[in-house]
Length: 173
Image (cartoon, rainbow, N blue to C red; front, side, top):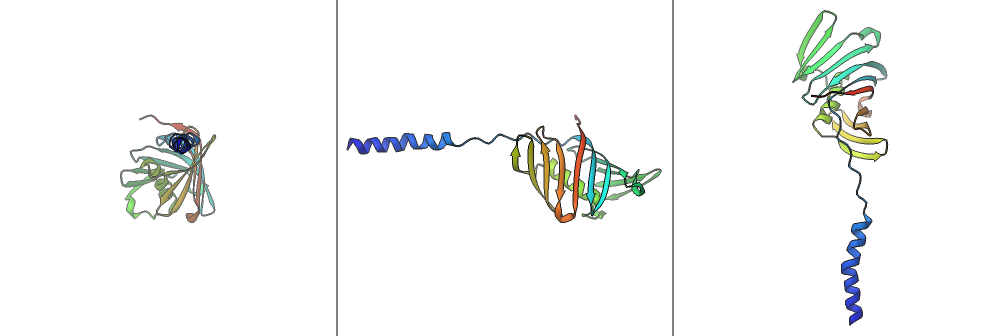
């Protein structure tokens, strides 16, 4: 009888401690930086696009295109649900709903909105950074983030869209 009691006590006290101590807690990921400015280089439908971008969690995004030459100088500004296009002295605005969902600025904005709204889900993590997944209207987006939480790139394969950010500067609001 004492042997059975000893076995039961071992199972009762020792087994849970093995399970609890044997599980390593996954290191928490840093919060994603949503207020930033950066230079970008993108590929959209097999065409290269370059420029600068600034964005914040209030939904204000400014995109300035510097390459290709035929659209260089184009500024795309999102504020609330309105989009404004400007080049030289020409300015036009439209409700965001009228802009095609698979257009370059719409894809970029949908990625930034999803991150700002907290919909991006941690997928993988290592000492250099993290990878997040985000469901967008145009397909699944894979987001690369450095160890400081700065977004370094995003890719939506189904939309033939990828973007890489450099010279990332955090904007304080």
